[in-house]
Length: 411
Ligand SMILES: *Cc1c(COP(=O)(O)O)cnc(C)c1O
Image (cartoon, rainbow, N blue to C red; front, side, top):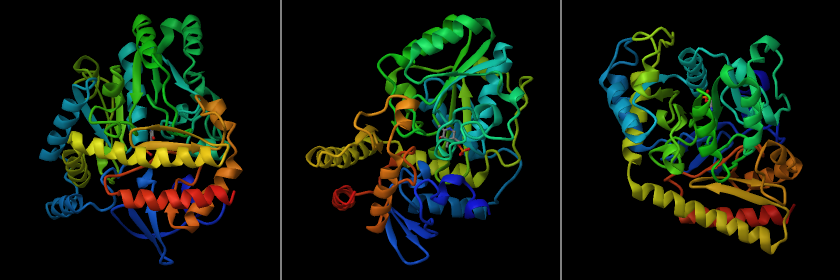
């Protein structure tokens, strides 16, 4: 396998060393083949908000498997999860399941183009939307880590309808609308960016995007593959009170199995086959195992007290970290929201791609390595998010703060 992995950041290329091969995972912990135990803060890049192998999720998957692993025909759990998603997200009246977040964003962009009968899209530097050709332009995540903002193999003609704007810089969006106005089908973004490290939208940034898209007859697409069910049951759109035209979901809604979804108002979703002309399909879409895992995860998660617990746990960790940074005069800063955050090795917290890229990634690598040595698994790249789960405890947080202190000290 290239790099020994099936997804690039897993290789530890960004931080050095060789990746831990995981043999099992339970709750907040992962165990590698060499017998090491880690407090895991990757949560499989976000999906595992309940923690690893939650007993109810595992039972649901087992029971679903007993009833058949794939039908190629509709089943009850697809309806149940669709209902839950529609109920939770202000911007979704109808939803279509896919097999990954990449498929969700690809389909969302196709839908926006089909609905508006326009070709151009605006994306933001540092936002990652999966690995579709025309979205791999100045993308975050692995694309940032490996310094290949635009991957070879993507023909110029595939990306020449992708316009680039700067995150948190509304004037960069306005300028594009002035020039391309009635040719722009959609603006797509992560409402809270999490693939250049966590970067929060500044006050009214999302509201202004809503206004400018509406005014110009373009659609607003929120890629909530990470934020959906992470910031709360209604994702970033409910959190910030801005309803997008199209929403992309993934990660948490699959409960650790491969899933994505896109949804919108009925008027827009009526474009999608078979009730509309826009083609979109999937042999394993709405897979019964994935639906069982997702539905169980979302049903279990659906309590205000869960989000409160996640928030308070994350606050303990983040506040402890801020304290260590301040007391030891470390050149680091933190961006955090609800149960996700990033430690940036730069004095002032980044607010866009450029300021994120200015971080000292060598320092992050050393920091990561130190933590790993003490049994703490942070994401193996400066440009990813730490995710807490309901399986983490105050005791884990205390242990982590101790390790963080020592890790900073030995920098
Ligand atoms: C992970 C991610 C994707 C891609 O999802 P995959 O399931 O990896 O294809 C898309 N958008 C965002 C914001 C993501 O974090």
